[in-house]
Length: 148
Image (cartoon, rainbow, N blue to C red; front, top):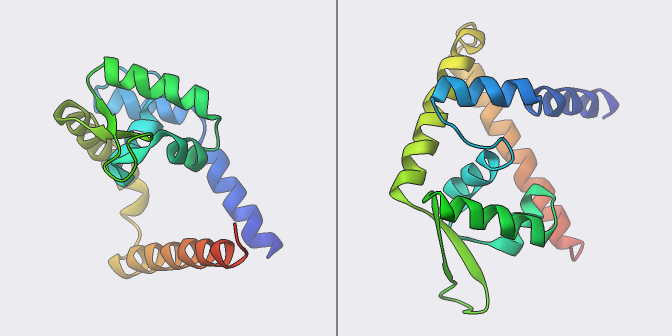
């Protein structure tokens, strides 16, 4: 478990390097604060999403995320609206412009990762995705079973 944990930490450090974010934004041709684009991607992948849930997912406090979502809204990348399930909850949902930006980021991510992953077989890539997804789902289920 220690070696697995070490590999995950190494991956997290590598994925969170500011220079990596700068490279991705430049490759995508997107001018956006580095603190905002991960939130935009989470909204795209998980939205509509409440600001509280978004804050929990990214590990930041509600007020910070609320301000950052308001900034994304002022840029026309997300829309804020009351949740259909609970009008007290404000949800963030991607706009067409937000979709254009996340599509550009996805394409840039693919171009930047392409040279590294070119040496991986399709089977290896699918197996990595399958195992990562399984681990995430099993960890989420264990947390839910523990009562959060």
